[in-house]
Image (cartoon, rainbow, N blue to C red; front, side):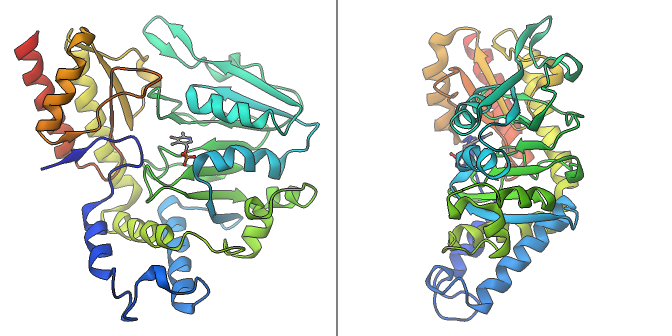
Length: 360
Ligand SMILES: *Cc1c(COP(=O)(O)O)cnc(C)c1O
């Protein structure tokens, strides 16, 4: 059995891949693949409408939000957000909770004059932490507040939505569909698809309709223009038709598995198991404060980094793949998105325990 802990592009549900395989040469009885028909063909359009409806059902997206399936992954949205909803002289607030936040900040600075960092990660009594919202230096006149609820590289998460008076924009690339959220608390939610939705390149954007109007005053590259893409049902230009199809299949799979609530329950159990293994050992460690620990991406370090290579080699030989931490952080990282079954976390913890007993 292979368990793939890659941070992204990441593991996809096996039943979805099997279905895609059986349908590859003959989609819906057409005798050709889904990649070979027009995106304007009614049979394809019907699939995209079902995908949107399924995502709306899964996330309980209110009617006053548009759902866009766009190009350019997560980073595409780092530019699209400021370009669509802020003016060049505006002030925008960003929480800096880790590496992806920093990339988003850097990009926003290209388009908006005043990018204010409201807070950053600090060293707390029990590890790295995000300061509480009441201590943030929020601007008086910000156009929006941007944050990344789950920092994929750092393994740092903010588990409550900041209560502020301006639209909240969230980069949910690595946490969308992992647990129930209240969409109405957000102005924009976006996510690159390759962690919890489908193949890379696609991004899902959920935008409150009143924000679409701001786009009209801004000059935005048309493929990235929210208002145009909403009006064109994400088909202003040819979408990534295969990625969209696969995302649609993942949404169907999620519904059949009991939806986001059922996923959250398993996700919590997987994370708890791994954090307990790390916390109950002096051989492994995680340096993030309890309240800001990610449920999806769990970095951990071996007390003796000389054993890293051996750890990775042995893990791989047991079918536990892609555990190497991000090059910025080092150590190990286990990413466990929805497609990772509980048994995967169990197999990892069993291996870690055996490895520790052998080398401690
Ligand atoms: C992976 C990731 C991105 C980048 O996505 P791309 O599709 O590579 O642009 C952005 N934000 C977060 C939080 C991510 O995890």
